[in-house]
Length: 144
Length: 204
Image (tube, rainbow over all chains, first blue to last red; front, side, top):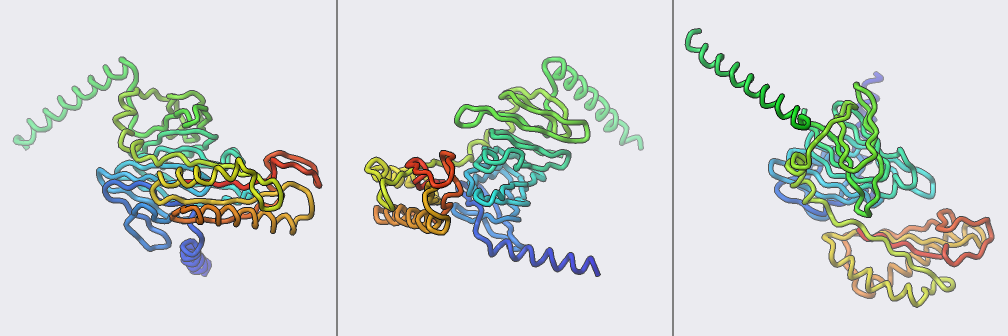
């Protein structure tokens, strides 16, 4: 029973994410890239919205650049799978969090405002460890 | 079975050669890992920190060019390897966002200097693909919170109108009010402070 409730909750949560305002947008695409939000997969184009829970993917010899609402900037190289798990940007309420996951591929990350206001609020998970970010730029490659 | 032997033998030789090459590479200055993180300076030149936590421990990267394996060990990765692994990724990095601050002489009247920024914001926006704009209004701490929330919203709306009247074309524009709860210059309540009476425009 608990499992059924959990599944229903997950389905509802997935739908809710697509109804919320976008947290970022695609700025650059070369080759083929996709965004999946709440089970709905679209081909990524310049201007495509990104939501909390979105999964960003690039194909072979492809790349994508995105900019988030708090001015965090990222780009992804070929064969990448990146998920936005949580994104909270309400400076007045003090709700600040950005957690994501790079399952495979490559990432160029440039910090935005969330980290400036709340150090340790930004994490990127990988299959073998967690990266905490404190106001900087970094490159990350996952090939396992 | 006999026909397979030569293949197996060549495999062994191949892997031995590979091992030797790997060993030489390691002696010459480190073996490049397939998964790693490397710290770079921010576009403004400052260098922050990256902390990697994994099964092998915790590694804090504090210097530009410093690298770590994803399970928490220190590793060395050469510039050539970084270039090879990330050139295409770095080429897709969007232009860094810009942030403009506009100040008010009274109510919703912009100072002359700030009004002159409107065409500059539009010019910056026009250089970006599918530009997204946030217009965020603020007040100082004079008067009560409901009044300031309204005033900050009026300021943001005024700037947004000026931008669209002057020809701004954007993928999205959001208008927000932070009232007196997000001060640029911290002050006690009921303090007159022109630097807090502002609108921030984030251009991305």
